[in-house]
Amino acid sequence: MQASKIANPCLDQISALGLERQALELDVCGYTVVEDVLDADLIARALEATLETFAERTGNRPDVVSGAGFEGYWVQRYLLLRDRAFEEIIVADKMLALVDYLVGEDSIISTVTGHIRGEGGGKTLPTGYLPLHGDDISMQPHPGFYQFATVNICLTDLTEESGCLAFVPGSHKRLRQPTEAERVLSGEGANPEAVPLVAPAGSAIIWPSHTWHGSWVSETPGLRVTLALLYARPHLQVYELYREMVSDEILERNSSRFATLVGMDLWNGWNENQDDWAKPWGKRDRSRYRPPVG
Image 1: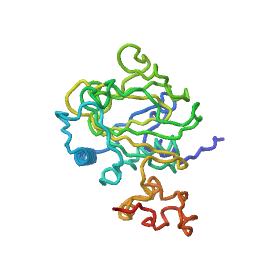
Image 2: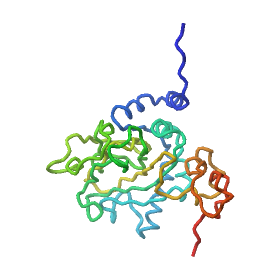
Image 3: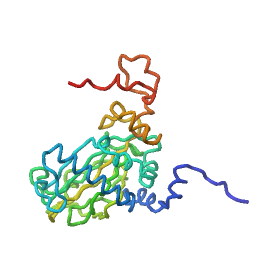
Image 4: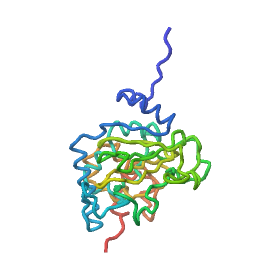
């Protein structure tokens, strides 16, 4: 006699990709890292697109080696539609298998944000470090399931000297945000539970929304560059507007899963277009919803 085989597409995918250890780390520790999620070409294209976005929006192109003009902590949002590299990244198979494990296969992308960490703190980060926090901003105690999954894609090496991420292992089980005292990462009163996480370029660092995390100050010249991806359950309000703005060309060159991530399977979001009220966004004329230009 043999026991029944338990079939689950998400678990089958995790097993096929050899990610059993990472799934266990998510359950036990509340975070994990997967190396080689991106190949060298995709890393280079994504890094270039990220730096170009910062250049266009700030008037100053970041220099990864010197870091001049980008001391402290810098953020640029709404990157997905700017370059095909970002389209490829949000559906990377190893990363997405673990996102599915945390928030389901029908999750949607809430934000694709570029992060730059330069030397020191300065005006953008007075403490020098990014305080510990969780990504679930709902009421506390948080629900016993995850509303969001966060992924940090390393476009450069993430070292302790460059201001690496800090995690509090097991904090995802506390179902609350850290107190002001627990948020401190440096100096007197620094949280002793925080541990560093370093990773090479091309890695994906993944955690559920309940996990406390932050980052330390960079003590070296040059820039640490990462992409922060936030995946949300489909009932949640997302940070960035994609379902109204993504072009048909982008949808046609990508997979059905990409379409799900940018909201094409959602049906909520009504206005005077009554003939659309029962249609998912992938079946609508989305030009009727885009804000007017000028």
